[in-house]
Image (cartoon, rainbow, N blue to C red; front, side, top):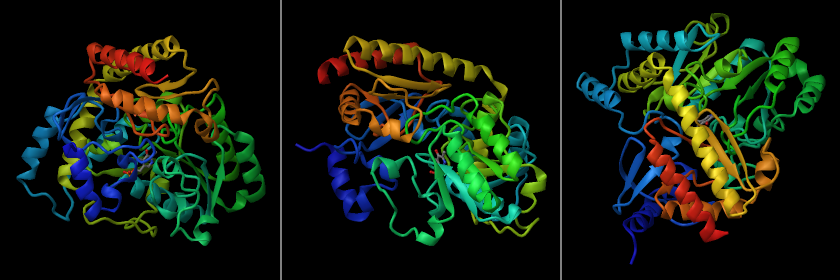
Length: 428
Ligand SMILES: *Cc1c(COP(=O)(O)O)cnc(C)c1O
């Protein structure tokens, strides 16, 4: 007997490469069949076979207040009747830009795009256009979307699938991408000492979320800021994950570090396809049509996407207590998980900040991609499936952060912890 998910996956593979429209969804690294979903509400997802899951992916971040958040659903329904796209400016685009500028430190202007990939691609082009330099530094295991230049030592699905170099990305493009290990300031100093005059930007996830959740060590981001200032290099914070999640103003606010350009995605569209690049006027006005750095989008600033994002961002802006609640829930869960793993005698290292976390099965601290890769990821696979059987939906890869939503109740967290205890006893 096959489940409905298994039957659908069989069909999907006939008409969609690998059966999915984004690689990590395929469960390839953990094995088994992806679960096809039917609907979701709050912290829960419901699959096509009638199973219920507590969701710790939350669409990879956007659903910070839970699925089908009522005010967002209502706003989308109302705006859909006005037309799903105009291809002309709307007042709503000013309102969301003003709101974002009021929430995020160090920015005057925002350009809306349709994904985090586009946001990072645009930020890099802008940094290159502004500085007149071609090279940039990224960190091993960080993911900045799937634009060619970033698919070098990339995290997320590239790391999950163990792809070393991506066919289709030409050597000429990859040559301009310099890489350093996360949290390794001397490696960056060396690259800048050798090639600083050619480096346009350093792009980083200020808290990494695409190799599991990895925190910047004290002094690391401050050190990058200093290097950038001393060498006229732009510091780009890729806040596609951390933006509006770690704080209203994202990692810049929480960690107190100023970036020159910031990219957003995920929460900014409340589950609709949205990304953005933001920064000070002096840099942003180099974008077309104000400047010559070209960037465009037929559906950019789409009214349905804008009202969804605007509604969610307004709620977050007006209720800062949400961040405190999320932090408390995450700490509660982390303590419970530590207890569950400890009781089973499993060595573990859990990274956690705000509502992002990841569990690695190793006795060593996880500070960079090689540490994350060296953990017992075989055990993670078994843990993932044991949790799924117990109704807990975790990211299907040790190289992804878990995302919590504020719809989670203490009861949900207790259920999750109990599932982790029983899962570990079953698989150890
Ligand atoms: C998800 C993600 C991206 C890419 O965003 P898409 O909307 O998937 O294109 C870029 N950077 C980071 C840090 C991300 O987590």
